[in-house]
Length: 286
Ligand code: AMP
Ligand code: MN
Ligand code: MN
Ligand code: MN
Image (cartoon, rainbow, N blue to C red; front, side):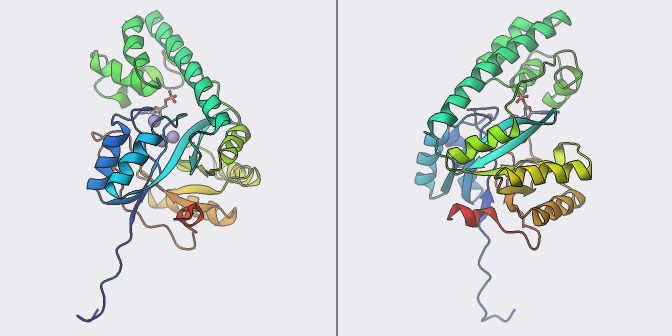
């Protein structure tokens, strides 16, 4: 580059997948936004699990920091006996059907955590004390049980608590009842949002099952797929990018940030979309 040529315009940092304390993140929405501002994020979505409760606070904070805010949600759902997550972007937080769904899911999640605590008690653990910690959360999840297990000295890290107690097949596990994929998709679209297939590399599906999932998702009205997320190796990105091209899904970028203490999921991490992928940001009118 000659000294007189203009410097390339910086690519704005985008993070379209984050969690706050309204689900299983540790930062309040305003704290999350402040951290995003420090990390020069220009476009931020808050996508709490089954909750839009933090969107108002996040919007106000984003306006203060000059960040463009995208109200979002991450809905758990079921596809062929598997748990799949859909990120909804640009949803209307006041949408009555979405609100009702989130309220129903909150009850269901509370019941599940109580049932898991009973199973932990049966396995010789202090289930009641663990449940008390987890149920104090705005939206209790297994992450909260994992943190309680650590705080009470039963696991060195939340990941170990999952491995030992909380994941499928372990003593504290209770299966969740999630809505069908088509139903979750319809909720996002009905709330004016665009639906994104979250972290497709984490579902442990064969290549053919991944294609079937992406194809069904597209047919049912899905718009995008996460092609760039921390923890995706080059092989994962190539596979997901191929799915995006094949099913004409736009590419989304996010960190899946939950807490500052997990450095491998940094908020607002810059990532480039692979070639020939349409960025979902364009469809958000941003
Ligand atoms: P739930 O929706 O209550 O089943 O909780 C699921 C949440 O637990 C996910 O959103 C992740 O944040 C977290 N999670 C799931 N599996 C693990 C794991 N193996 N290690 C650490 N966190 C996990
Ligand atoms: Mn989570
Ligand atoms: Mn997820
Ligand atoms: Mn997430």
